[in-house]
Length: 415
Figure 1: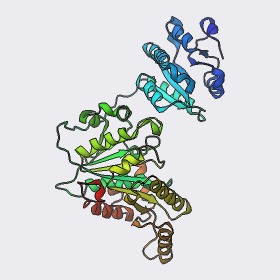
Figure 2: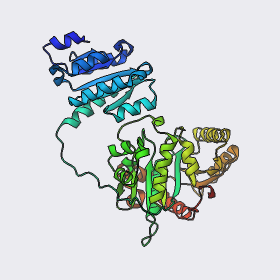
Figure 3: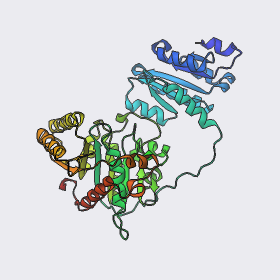
Figure 4: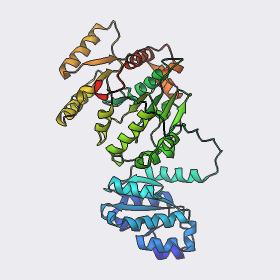
């Protein structure tokens, strides 16, 4: 580690600086900086950073790592000054934050910070962020940006049906169901197909973009973190078209805190989608968050995917208790059993009945195991309707789409 006086006299160029109140409070950051940058980094306080960034010596800096905790939230204006000073010199700013509120992170990211990493630092995360930052600076092949979806501000509201999909545990096929359900709805009729919008609200690890081979766009982050200024044009700019059939709002490019979004943000996004589309499919994160209630309230049908195993059974009971405790409409949940027993598997069908009886729920949809074709289709960015139209899972999802077309579009409580 190098002091500020060393920064100005050391003949080897300083390529990075940590900026914080006391770097000793961030020992893991020191370890990672030494491993990645060797001797070519230094440490500065907030006031010292402003002075140094105004000097010619700062021209060699690639980035600054601004390490903050909850004690620094009273000095957001000073932090913004540091970020703006770095931005003026073309220097990247990486936030290293511990116990900082989402509102403060939002403000810093919206006003120029380039990236965010929670502290304690996940292993290898700082190295990946720096590598990504350096790669972005290298000249790249010019690829045309995906065309925005043209939406009219004065369009008459379609009051679209909202269908949410929530996996009760990992690997229960929630995203597979959401993607393929959207595709089947959009292809239900050749002459008068409904307009379908697919929204990935798993803003941390959402994979709808992977399932459909679509790029993740910064416009998504800008949209969902500034919904008060959202209009039809900005919403359309964040959407992408898949095969001219469905409009997709992917997860943002980088991981962001789930509670960075508020219930009001989610309500505005869903309301905007309902205005322009007949069906709005929402792929939810597995975690219950502050805005889960907003989606549950807006949804006509809330599909909860599970399997015949103990983890799904326990989580189904937990979510039922949680919704009942908060007096939320848990009756909207429609349980979907993925990898259900075959028709001839009488023992398996008996297990399904015992599972439903023990949880006092009704398992409304049974989806067969689609086998390797499901994984292959996802890896190649294609829904089953294109990759494997005769797959048994695809056929059942098509039947589900057909039944959902009859849902009343006028009242979310109708379902």
